[in-house]
Length: 198
Ligand code: IMP
Image (cartoon, rainbow, N blue to C red; front, side, top):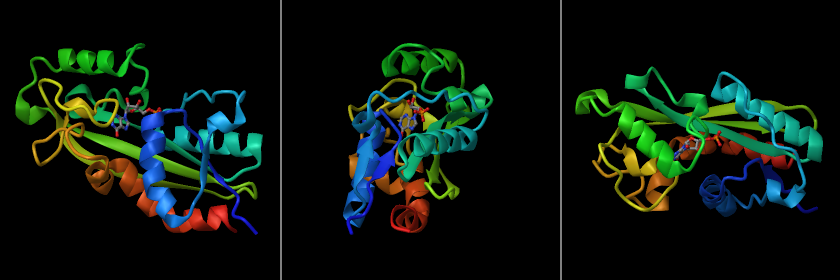
C-alpha cells in the first residue's frame, strides 16, 4: 500500500524546499497547501511557537484528513527582548528586505557583542487519529551590521553564524546541517515515520 503523503502546512517556498531536502531521502513524499487550494489560512495568533505550530497542524489535519507537519519559526534578538519572535514574518508588513532594514535600524546603536540572536523552529505533527507531538531546534548567531549573501530567505543575509559568514552566504546543505529547522526536523524524523505510516 502506498504511504499517505505528508501535508507540509506552509506556503513559504524557502521553508518547503529546506524541509523537502531532508524528507525526500527518507522516502517521505510531501505535498504543500497549494494541492488543497482553496483552503483557508490559519491565523497564527498564539503567543508561542509551539501554540502556533500545533494550531496549524491540528487545523489542516482536520480539514484534509492527512497527516500534517506544521512549522512555526522566527528570530529572537536578545537586544530587542526576544523580538520579533512569533511575529517575525509580519512585524513589518512588507518584504523580507524591508524587515531586514527595520531590524538593522533598531539595532543601529547596539554594539557587536550585544547583537546576539537565535532562530527558533518548532515542528508540530498531527495525525488523523488524534496524535500530536512537537519538536524544537535553535540556531545561535548574531545580527550583522549590513546584509551579505544571496542564499536562504528572511533574515538570513544579516544572520551571522559562528563562522562569521551569514546564513545567506552558505549552501542550502550547509544551512540544513546546522539550522534550527534541520535540528527540529531530525528530532521529529522517527516519530514522523510513525505518523505517516501508522
Ligand atoms: P512563520 O511562517 O510564521 O513560521 O514565519 C517565520 C519567519 O521567521 C520567516 O518569514 C522569517 O522572517 C523568519 N525565519 C524563520 N526561519 C528563518 C530562516 O531559516 N531564515 C531566515 N528567516 C527565518
